[in-house]
Image (cartoon, rainbow, N blue to C red; front, top):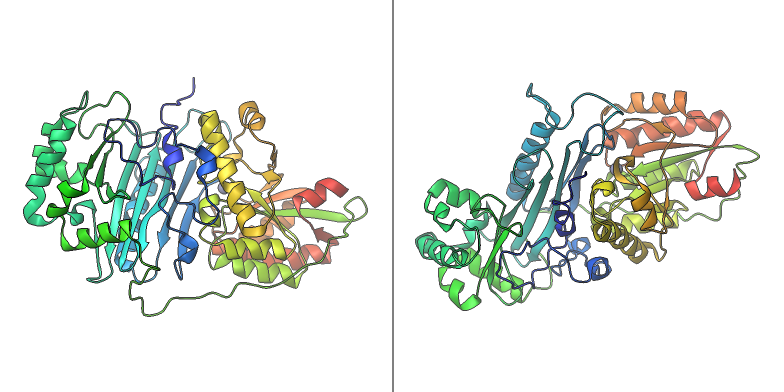
Length: 482
Ligand code: ZN
């Protein structure tokens, strides 16, 4: 029996609706009204924040695509908010290290066996969503799903950046120091109405700080507090959520909290954190004509690049591919597509194929049908918004697919023939040599454009294999002509 109780969490990732004002113990990750349909083109975070409008944004991603060691972690790096990026990096790195068993600690998630792992093995997924990106205020929620940890394995926390004072803060930074006990008392009062809640646990200062790590304003200025499971009792329905109305909470807010509240209710036109300079990487403008390669007559290879787009690596890759007139297939992750629609547009314009690799890289075989649909349709909608074209292919994260996943989508699944394991070996010449020595006619090769070393391997792959008579085509082109 597969564990399904955690699955709703994945819908939350990147999609928590701030307009929700429920104050009961219902999971914030419960059924998302509209599900996949709630994905608006280009503004896909549910909070109205369009990450593509944040100048110089970079999504830091580190994933495996290995069934024996399933992890995927992403967080944003916004220019000017370096202290917050550093805090999120520390958080994510610690979780990844714990899961992967680095630094001599036992591997919780990666047991060293390969290939034989079943669906009940561990999985770590760290995802993000923007809460506010407006004026001099930036708010990000990180959501971790860790299927080897105790409790429900779901952990969310919010990070706040104050561009005026150049400081990064946790959720409690929204509350004035002198008002914290009044605030906590009000939260406890609401929790008392919840079945199974243990409000007294907030009396302990250490537990208080750990528990009150996820707060954000609602669209009408109220403050919503989300509690991870087992922090303030055991909720029958999952996690506890408390929302304090605007009139109640406003007197307790810090100056920074008041600005966050104001920017949530009435966002400014843009985000200005006073970054000295925002890097603006050029987007390649290569435009390709139709591909007439006949894979029945010549030797073809379909290179595929998963988990992007990623700035600046994807742009570099596009320039390499254009040089050799190579066509490839990108299996993009939805949360990265909405951050970098210009890169996805450049991929399509250059004659490459853009496929769907889910919204935030979960093992789809562990999700409910509604979640599987949401993961795929939100991503397809984001791809269509960027390129004007619906994808027809998808690659399941970790290659994990079953009949249920197949039955829930019209997208055609694509696995691979050659796995470079480039996420494990960040070594350009190793990756290049692996592809050159292993890839054969009409085979599909798995690479990742989130790794600079994989991108750096591409010129050698293209030059060597082109000299050996290979042509580089998209997966759909290969399938249509081989
Ligand atoms: Zn992947």
